[in-house]
Amino acid sequence: MAYQDRFKVWESSGVRIVPVLSQPHDSWTGERGFVQDAFSRDKKIYNPHSTGEVLCGHRQVAEVVVLRVSLHCRGCERKMRKHIFKMEGVTSFNIDFAAKKLTVVGNVTPLSVLASVSKVKKAQLLT
Image (tube, one colour):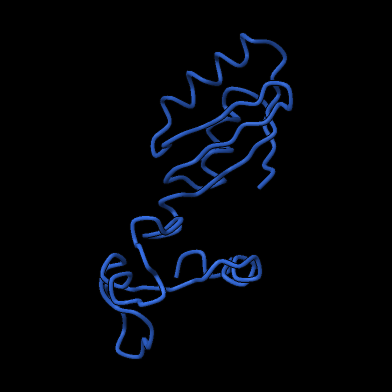
């Protein structure tokens, strides 16, 4: 199950976790069906539309990769921006020029992002 390794941390900060599987195995004892239907059935959620955030799907849908990138000037930054725009699976990214840090979000893997970015500039995987 996606994000399961983070459940305890989130719960310790006061977040209530309700795992919901649309197509569970027979042994699954948790919520079944669609997330919005589980919210409707849950009597402790008074307004499903104002409930904070719901994470759905597989982990790869929203992988976050952070790299330290060798950016010496704004030209390097532009070159990197053009390269990231062309990468398959990227849904968003941020370049922090001052920190020389690149954050990529999307259906990507850390190694694929590192390999691709390394073709343009020297890079090091941070997360």
